[in-house]
Length: 222
Figure 1 (tube, rainbow, N blue to C red):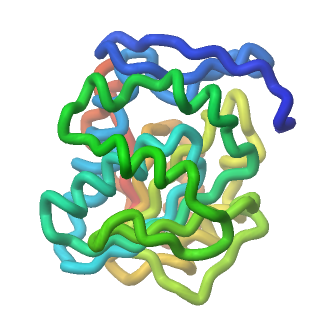
Figure 2 (figure 1 turned 30 degrees about the vertical axis):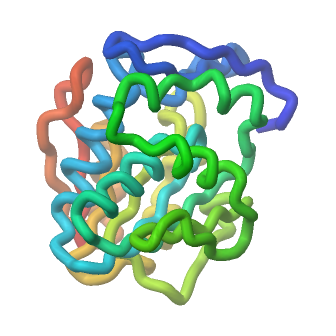
């Protein structure tokens, strides 16, 4: 994907905004609601299931920073230290970020946190606040490895129709190796082949109800 892609801001059914890429006919979030999808998939079924006082998160697809912003809010509200690594190959320009309305829709979210998430430097750890530490990495997941083990992986790539190369078994085998035992991978996707690939590399796969507009989502546990 190229940095000069046309990017349009769209409002979703819960009133929060997302981005639409005409070139691949894909949105960054569910058209039924960006914030409610992120909360349901990644916070409720991801972070909330990790009971440690210090949690390490790997996000594949940093994008608008919504998942990181919600995680930052969760960290502060629950006195939980989160070390968050976000992979992104196409950082969004400031003029696009400024059009997103997450802060208007969720009063608990911090304007300062949101700006720091996007203005912080790449390839090094940044303290967003005393409970949340962010490392943004400009690298494809296929090329990423870390000596750090993660407690939860947010798999938030574009769907298999738009980015087939992001949904192959080799990627999930690599991610499995980077999870702590008992750690989980969570994603909105519930396609059969994807779940079979997760099982084949060692994940215990479960289905839970999805966010509005999706019957199911997938959880893979190591």
